[in-house]
Image (cartoon, rainbow, N blue to C red):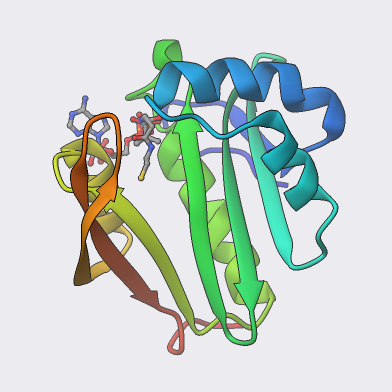
Length: 158
Ligand SMILES: CC(C)(COP(=O)(O)OP(=O)(O)OC[C@H]1O[C@@H](n2cnc3c(N)ncnc32)[C@H](O)[C@@H]1OP(=O)(O)O)[C@@H](O)C(=O)NCCC(=O)NCCS
């Protein structure tokens, strides 16, 4: 799909079943309540979902997961392998995810993020995501509120 400008010479493509071992390693290292592999497999079979991976020097460096309904989308998961964080992979993945959402006619892309996840919140804010709500006690391990963010895409060039 696309190569990063800047520091990360990473590329982004659609996730495949063969990626799942590497995806699950990153998922388990990134979240205290990681998704099951079956969740990724199920979403990969859904035409209404889009799962992307970023590769860096032939290694899977990160991934994102979205699903769509009518003109709305949800960014349900995004993670970068700890060794590659801070090198632009997350930004590349988010940029490509937004491009996919736009290409599917999405007018509003939503996500939830832990209130204390400042790195992710800053990343989302730089792409124009705005806080639109709070889901009280949304997360477990530890229990924490979710901040709901929305990116309005109606002004994007299609
Ligand atoms: C959130 C995450 C995907 C970001 O990926 P990344 O590859 O590290 O991010 P990038 O290197 O592209 O950096 C993008 C922006 O994130 C922020 N950021 C990244 N690393 C940061 C750090 N160590 N401290 C503060 N901000 C940071 C900055 O705003 C940065 O933009 P800048 O370089 O212009 O300042 C990654 O940290 C991650 O996998 N975290 C664990 C899983 C997670 O929390 N996912 C989000 C769930 S809602």
